[in-house]
Length: 560
Image 1 (tube, one colour):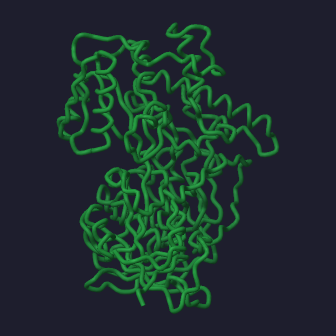
Image 2 (tube, one colour):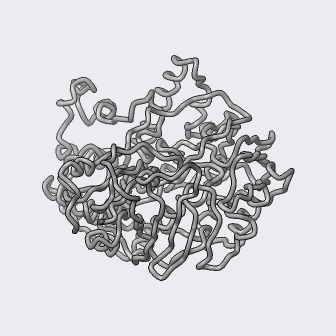
Image 3 (cartoon, helix red, strand yellow):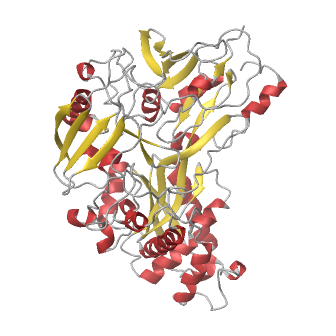
């Protein structure tokens, strides 16, 4: 690896953990949203040293072939790279809240089967042509045509057709009300004349960087000129192909790359590398365990969930890429009066209510919480713990669980299976515990997790969206049949602080009840990371939707 510029630059390698959001913003329903500023504007980075000469070319990792069609790219590194080029109708911010990007205004009809979108007037493709309604409909039609070949097709399953009103207005027709439909409109918008271009083409986008050239060494991106160039800003990016994160990290170490996107599983392999400069941020990975047919008694399940409660994993000594979490959504996304959910005190109350602890136990005296091992019913037969054989994180979790059980006097056997065998065993239920992972949906509406074992019927699961991106209405929300999410929040207005707090507390209470009654236990909210090489000065502000947010504010040492 090259030598660092100066000892002062070592300070720039300090790990910056993504700031937690202060909670959801509750606003009254609005038909019109004012235009957002360009989401790819430069993000203030650490102060740079006086740089003589222009920035070098930043080298990024892209796996598989180069380049794929943006509407077919499913890999995390590919999506991350394309987030520099292509805008979306809506985007997710750092708090996992939906924000308009190319959309200026939107509204549903009374049946919530037609969505009218008005596009921003000031957005152009890189060739200076305006983004029009026809571009949106052409992109949607191509996603429909691609079907399972596009990672965006499934979440757009409620979309049937669209029609033009004018160059900046269109109507989308739905086959059914879909509470997460606005979240599905986070696909890359492609120019109508380019939606079906073959692999190896150069597509027009709307964000800060444009496709410049496809060369033997990779794909070059160039900054779109919106302001006078300076001598110390990033102007060009080279996207290089590596077939895996491991090989990309080797490229980083060999000074062939400057940035590498590490998914959760890959980050797990580098947790102990203190020499790496990483920016970590919440991923969509959620890790949990479920019970087989042998563990059906609610009190027995409660004993196990307390034994394996998320707080215990944080002190296990395992190098886990994420934060312990009983809740299957990011802690900063849930609107708990601006406070993440902490179940420590809730456990104390629950154990008392179910006769598993004395009345002396209370949230204010957490030291009186019983030792988990004392609540576990020990059986002579060995517990069978299933885990997929291709996920190192889950295997580590299962082995730690077996170790804890053995220490409590309960024999346990970890059985690692192929994906097909694992799925078959889950279907049969011939196990005691199974460790699994799941991808959190874009909408992050918690019922996705609690309905995994017994999916809600279509009529029950269809909460209807208000005319605001992050809210649901009262009439047909899943709340009516057992799941309370955005409905509570939709009642709270910004000026009614006491009402907001009361609804937030009510939501917290019902969510906690659901967590404790579900036939599963939460463990870990995963993280992913951006790894930096030695040439990079400054840092990004990565989010799940835009891992390279702020990349244009970096400076790359050219070596001269």
